[in-house]
Length: 107
Image (cartoon, rainbow, N blue to C red; front, side, top):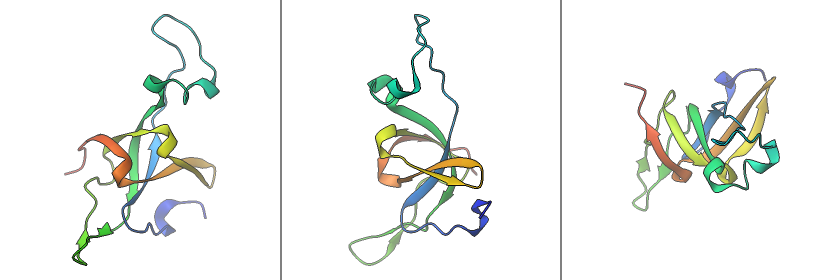
């Protein structure tokens, strides 16, 4: 499978692509990739939503749609992301409830 077109996401899960981040601190120190998750300020990831599921089922049995849509920018803690490779591209998956904040980019 080489694209997201054939991927069906369940419930309130989202597929995101991480925006490139720098490994250089304000003081000019270059950090190894392994340090990014251990430093709280670097553990927050900026990602672009690629796909969303239809939403979760509420206590009343009705579906609650996802608040974020494809194209939105979300901020998620790195430990909430599960990495997945589709073709030669790396994406990440998370539950919508793990989104800390987002910028609405879709109409």
